[in-house]
Length: 158
Image (cartoon, rainbow, N blue to C red; front, side, top):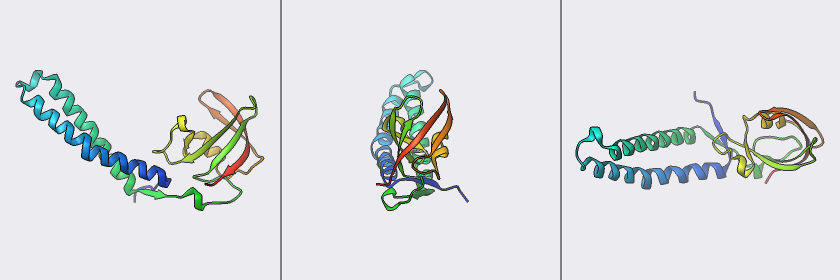
């Protein structure tokens, strides 16, 4: 049996939108591009044709990946969660003990992670260190940039 992929309802919606765009817009467009490039003659030296075929392969691979991910999705709605311990879906307000800098991260599924939007993967070192912890606790995490210590200030389920 395949391993379940945890995901928020928003993450599931984003993947479904991407899948629809790939199937209804990008794949038909690349098929047209291949047809146009094929009409230009000798395929062995046709860079447009080869580029379009490569793009088609990438699109088909992404479609397959998204379909498999969605089929294994375990959708967890953070707004229905509560408690004093950090779990998947929680937004966690942390303070870097060394710099006094505060940051809020949401713990999400691997396909939803986006550090620019402060969404970290449940499988990341920081998320793994936070799961099961409570407000007031300190966690020490070895990050690529070196060790960091965070104090948990708040846990938000919304």
